[in-house]
Each structure stands twice: as C-alpha cells, then as structure tokens.
Image (cartoon, rainbow, N blue to C red; front, side, top):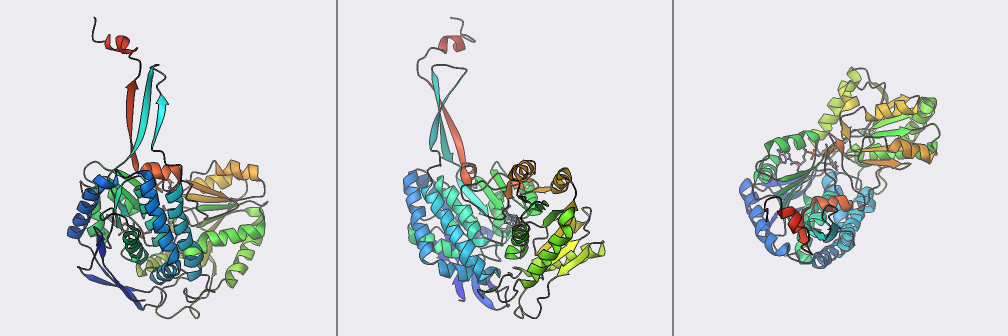
Length: 493
Ligand code: NAD
C-alpha cells in the first residue's frame, strides 16, 4: 500500500510537517507515511471547526443524517481497502477487520444516519405551575475535541464522529499517531460525501502536542476522550476553562462462569473475551472467575482449544491471533507477566508461537496465569494484551465479591443456563456493560462506558448521543394565571 497521508484542516489535506513512517506490527515493513500535526496546526483546525459550527449547527437533522448515510455508502463501497489498511496498521487479523471492525463501523454510521431516537425537543409539564408548559431543546455543544486510542481505530473514528455530527457539533479528531490510517481515509471520504469544510478536521499527532492543545483550548467546548485511565486522569487535571468531558477508559473485566453453564460455549466465550485482538480491547475479559467445582475441567478444555488457535501472519485469513500493535505495549505486557510470575502467579499455559509468526513482527504468546493474588499488579491492573488470569469461587456472593474487587468497572460476562440467576448477578456487577452468555458484542443502540475508574459518560445509544448536546428549557406561561401569586412575593399591589 505505502500511502502518504496529510492532516485534514477545513477540507484540505495538508502535508506540511514532520513525516512519520508507520511500520507494520506484523513484520516491521514500512506501510505509510503521515505528516505529524503541530500545536499550530491544531489551533488552525480548531479555528476551522469553530467557524464551521455556525452554519453546521443550523442545518436540519435530516440534512445531517443524509450526509452520514452518504458516508456509510461510500465507505461500504471501499470496505475491503479499509479492512486491509486497518490490519496493516494495527496488526489485527484480517479476519477480524473484514468480518467485524469495518462492517460494524459502517453499520454504526448507518445507525446514526437513520435513527429516529435523537430528540430535537420535547414538551414537559411543570407540576408546580399549572397553566405553564416547558419546551426542552437539545442543542449542540460546539467544537468537540475527540481523542482516540490505537486499538480499534476505525470503530473509534466512527464513534467519535457520527454521534457529535448528528447532534450538530463540529469535530477535531485526533486518532492515535500509531494507527491513524483508517481515520485519515475516512477524512478523505467525509470530503467526498459532501460534508462542508471544517465540520470534521482530522489530525495525526502526539498527545503532548495535538492532544494537549485540544484540551487546553478555550475554543474547544467538549473533549470526548478514549484511552487509558492514567491519561484520562491527567486530562482532567490539566484542562483549562470550562468544558465538558466524557472519558472512556481502561478495564479489568471479569468473566464469571457458573457450574451450570454450557461449558463448551462458555470456554469459547472466555477465549473470545480475552484473545480477540490479542486482548488489546478495553472490555477484554481478562479475569476468568470460574466456579471451583468445574475449575479443572474448564481450564483443561480452555487449554486444549487455545492450543489449536492459529498464530501466524495477521494478513492471512486463517490466522486467529493478532499481533501486538506497538513496541511499548509489547514491553508492558512482558514486564507485567514477568513481574506476576515473580510474585507467585503460576504460568498454567503459554502458547508456543515464535516459529510460526513473521520475523520482525511484534507478538506476545497467549498466556493463562493461575494462583494470581488480587494484591499484585497483574491481578488488579489492565494488561491490554493476551493474558488471562484465572480465579475461582465457591458461592454466588463470592463470585460477585471477586468481580467487584477492582478499581475498574467497564464490562463483565456471566455464564449460566439459569437466566434468572445470571440476570440477578449481572445487575449486581459494577460495570457499564454486562453480557449474559455472550461477550464483546456491541450495538450502536446500547450505551457503553464505565463505572468507577473506567470512565465518565457514555458512548453510543441514546445516552451517547445526548452527551453531545446541551439542553435549553423554554418556560412558557400560556394563561398568565400564576403571575399574581408569584409576583405577589415582591409586588404587594
Ligand atoms: P493512551 O491513554 O496512551 O492514549 C489515548 C489517546 O490520548 C491517544 O490519542 C494519545 O495520543 C492521547 N494522549 C496521550 N497523552 C495525552 C495528553 N496529555 N493530552 C491529550 N491527549 C493525550 O491510550 P492508548 O495506549 O492509546 O490506548 C489503550 C487504552 O485505551 C487502554 O487503557 C484501553 O482500555 C483504553 N480504551 C478504552 C476504551 C473504552 O471505550 N473504554 C476503548 C478502547 C481503548
């Protein structure tokens, strides 16, 4: 492929700036060059978004939805290019890009392009004041600074653009400088679809330049951030002025398996939960909590299936396991696992992959650790890699105690044939998404986000759309009848 990409400011692709050569995580070869944006370029993009807001915010909802639909159709016609590029840039398997990330992203643009759920306004009664009515209007907020991580770049770009645009905001999107390619392709298609210049501006850059400029700019009215909990905390403390924040952060999600679960399905669900994208997903089910009575049997089936999963070149449609996207991430995984083993965790199984993956690539062998204490880092902190820790429990309440004994609260899974029990447990787990006999499946109609250190606010669904709005309440006295009572408080005649 070897494309050359610039930054999109006010509808123009701008190639000025330091060139960054992106390398394939799968084998280390060069795949593209991108121009890194500076703080100055970021300010230009913010000005463009600010200027475009005036007209864009006054367009009608059907006009905005028509453009989103055009975009969905355009991306659909190039879905294969997007899948190739996504896998080249991230090292995720081409099967995952082709069958999940890209089609799901297109479906999500289409969802926001056609949803009837976005409220323009609603009427209310004021129970205290008969004879009056209220109109609540949902207005856009202004310029949204959208900051994304490197793990699911296309889906992330869609989630960071479609809902705020639908609500009438303009956006400056900063994909991660490790994986900006599909967001930059999307920027090209946004122009082709006919969005007015400046409504979407896409900049590749580092957190310390583009990211910090977005967060500190008084012209940016909202930051929609997805990334690690530590960066999210830093953003909140470094923000200047008054702006809204939504933060989608990290997780250490439990996957609870009861003895009455369909074992085969639960094993598949647990493997899917942790090894999809090689564990580099915020909601990865990284803590298996299995009922003690089935522990041995469950772990042995799990190991057997893991042995059969195929490592190899991610661009091969047969490969099951993704590469690790960045060298820094690979080092972090290695050091967390080494430290865990030093502190008493047992290496129950680690797959041998060295001989089958391409030389020059970045890979980490799927790993299963047991005897992991919750006091050590690998038991408590997000690894963001293909590392599962297995814990066990005797009674329902113990499962819940272990599941909730974490600072995070992003997602969880519950596996049981007894749906009443599973739903009862699900509603006591402190997490923004809980799957019952399922994992990872995302719907554009459902809000996602975190409890506790996993975030503030929601993305997707009605709740996610409303995050990009501010309300105006118009209080109308239709009859004039209450004036005498109210005004009598200060006017005696
Ligand atoms: P990260 O926090 O290092 O970076 C995220 C983004 O923030 C990047 O674009 C980065 O350049 C930018 N950034 C870094 N420092 C910044 C600063 N000072 N000011 C402004 N922007 C700054 O995260 P990452 O390593 O790219 O992604 C992995 C993390 O993302 C994991 O913790 C994962 O759980 C989380 N994640 C969460 C969700 C979710 O929906 N909750 C989804 C995907 C990933």
